[in-house]
Image (tube, rainbow, N blue to C red; front, side, top):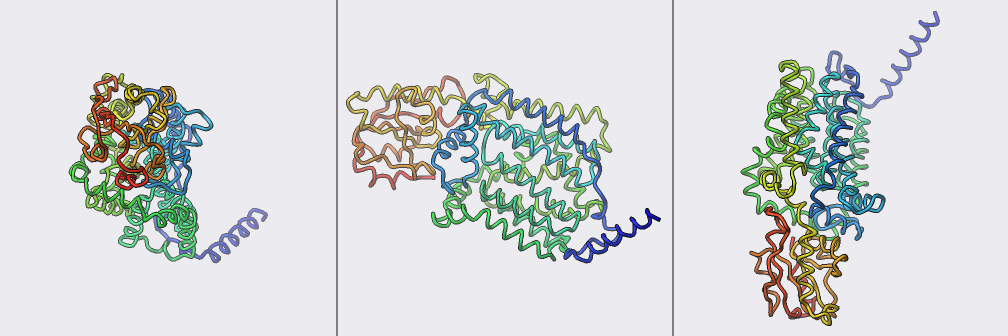
Length: 517
């Protein structure tokens, strides 16, 4: 009798809960009603720990990436936004260096944590789509072995946090669709708002998912008061950067337009890079995932993912955007494709494929080879080369600086074409007695110009083919090319140093002509 009484009370509680819910529950027999498989906590944690160990062991090799140097300087100029990004990544860089030091290893602790979290999220997505413990483990292994996760896990970049944000939002959307519980819109709103403080590109994911939901459903999840509440939360969290951007003329759209104008190569290489940046060996898995999400009745409620992926791919192709804009959604498809692949592929063959992919991708995405041999992976992944040669570059600048008479150095200015060169001088210059460099590039333009009292010689650092910057000055002579110490084709190796006379007009008047994105 006691058991019957308890069962009756629980049924009454469930009835009240259903009656109070403002969200329409899936109909009987709908696949969204099923529960989740058990979580492969131990194996997934082991994969995450192995990834963290590899990233940590290699985090100090080569040196800072030009973007990391820039983020460190931007973090010292805290604001609600910058010309080329919202504030979150520079703030993470500042927090990391303040707590752990300004070495590459210290800065990249944040990147390691973010990418480990991304791998765990991929496993959770596989579970959300019905994957058992083995499927979750394989999904985590594939994500950890992919070139994009290894590459972004090694560097602190806006794309590092962006990947995690896209995956978390995708997981929350899948949970919303599977359960039909509109309260998940609150969590989605929080994730979107925080993600927008890192990169406004996230709006492209939101639009793609919403349009896909309208096209293929299940549209019943939209009939809830939690949708506007979640949208309001997202807007409130993202508001500081959005207000800053509006007040400054939406500069990130200007930067995006510049990328689009130069996007012919990106358009041509978009699909091949999607294959390479995960791994050619993983192409059958994410292709199987797209097919499964579209055709498998057990996950029919998630068929908006392949539609959103197609919409996103088309938008990036038209806009001439970067391939990594699409990759997070392909990781979702990768998680979906593991289940059918595990059923059809022999375990030994699957393990061997993941191991080969991990080995190749480690060479492409991580500083495994010595700097002298980095030209090979740099040909595939140009971000490798951008981590090499910064101390040597600053040493070259210091040699040119010493050619300025000592009496004139207090009034002299170092002007760099690119934020990377200016930020490298900020990091390594003090040990050579160099002042901070100025630049008209991106947000560096907002941190200048030099004072008009700086009417001494000007040391120019610019790409050899750039004639616009030296044309603004007179009496320029070539000091020499930059020596980075290695035969690596990167942006800094293309620079030359010129020593010019004083600026022809006050810096305040000259500065607008030097601004560029």
